[in-house]
Length: 96
Image 1 (tube, rainbow, N blue to C red):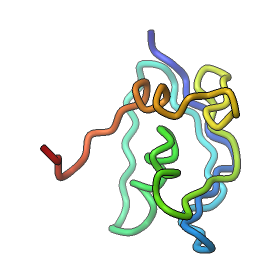
Image 2 (cartoon, rainbow, N blue to C red):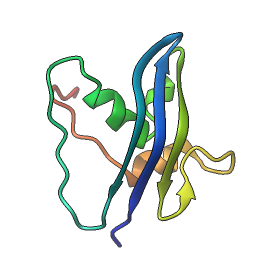
Image 3 (cartoon, rainbow, N blue to C red):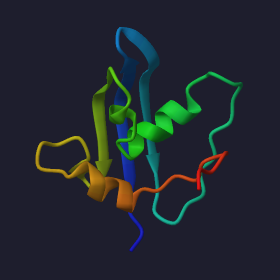
């Protein structure tokens, strides 16, 4: 079943460094969305916030909301591993 992603006021940090600031957007079910921009502009950081991979980096934290079908992905009751199973990533350089 396709799911809707709603992002509101999302800011991501690495320690005190603000990597991305105040992103809001909606990804509709069964839609294709692309993120383009120069190297270092925050594309990968933003994608990592959607599946909670950002927080595995030391000092990584987010402010704002990421909702998957109206469920807060950063809520206390949400299992990060379950989120990563639902929202996958394809890496540019795969590791065996």
